Amino acid sequence: MEGERPRYFPDERDISAALPFTPGFGSTPPCLVGRDELIRDVCALLAGDPASEGGANVLLAPRGMGKTVVLNEIEDAARAERGWLVLPISGTDGKPIEETHKAVRQAQDAWSQAHGDPAKRSVSGVSLGAVGLSAGVSFAEESDSRRTGYGDDLRRDLGDLASAAARAGSRVLLTMDEMHAIPLAEARKLGSYIQHIAKRERQGLVFLGAALPYITETLLADRKSTFLQRLAVHTVDPLSEPETRRGLREPIEMHGGLIKDDALDASSSAVAGHPYMLQLVGDRMWRAAGGAGNPITINHAKKAVAEAEESLEDHLFAPTWQSLSDNDKRFLAALAALAEADSSPRVTAVCEQAGIGQTSGSAYRKRLLLSGMARPAGRGRLKLAHPAIGPWLRQSIATGSVQVPEPPLPGI
Ligand SMILES: Nc1ncnc2c1ncn2[C@@H]1O[C@H](COP(=O)(O)OP(=O)(O)OP(=O)(O)O)[C@@H](O)[C@H]1O
Ligand SMILES: [Mg+2]
Image (tube, rainbow, N blue to C red; front, side, top):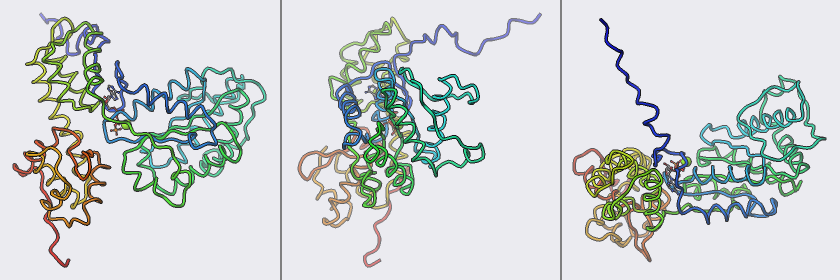
């Protein structure tokens, strides 16, 4: 007689619609801490005159600091509180002009459809916001064959959309995550369109991007684009100690758990202000303790920190190390070596240790800050951006899993 089939998926009720932490890139956490002021500041700028500097903004931070989450919160607030039309674009596709144009056309279709024009196709992925879109909206009609040629008429179509939004008392918010990934030529073109619509035509079009900090050296330093040069920059900073503690404790308590004081001390100091690490440590502690109703002890916290550090190494430190130039790697390795004895060594000492001339010190310092592997530590000093970077790099170099490039021979 055949027995009952074994069951492999977890019981749906056990997944408890209710995990307190979300250790994944881009997932909004149940308890978002420390970002209210930043979000309010950016919203205030977006709500101001679109033709002013605050009409175009960019959020900058290293990986895992919470850019996407902040961007998504602002998009949601714009839809819910103002009924704005939000067009979210991702820079990773490498074709922002085409992506933007597709989104604009979808929005035009959705807009027309909202007015009961049955000839229009059904669309998805576009939110029209809460505003009732009043009559009198019409967009330039094109044959289907021309409509597949995205790009050329973007300025006109985006301008028309912003003007239709304005007539309905609304605005268009164009957002671009992973903005560092877009090609310069496309960034210039898109920037000039946005600038023309917002400043020359004075339509209600506002912009918010999110990117890794190195774009201050690339896109934002572009002399040919005033749009890129003038983007208002907002940094998404590490969380403070009290914010980190709240970010760990609140979701646990909200989900029927409890964390002991010593466990909270140990876990929040290991997080060191890093939001992705917060989610990793929180999640691993919650699982180690066995979920709701089980107090999280110091042993659960220690186990969780060890697991989370491993994950941080694989998903953050190692890929960032790979992306550094040979000289930057030597500079970072020297910083990690010195940081064992002094957590904030002098840049001059780092240069000496790395065999790099003192004159290049400030350039390397800046590049490491932009990579997110280091933080400033007072005049002429530097420290590693996360306490786990030093032990990881020293250990990886010692075991040979990471190689530090040799300095070039003199005269080459
Ligand atoms: N303020 C916060 N409070 C608690 N958790 C946060 C906060 N901000 C982000 N997180 C969590 O941190 C992780 C990383 O967030 P997010 O993906 O937004 O970072 P990011 O800066 O966009 O990273 P990347 O550069 O890799 O795209 C997510 O798991 C998210 O839930
Ligand atoms: Mg992101």
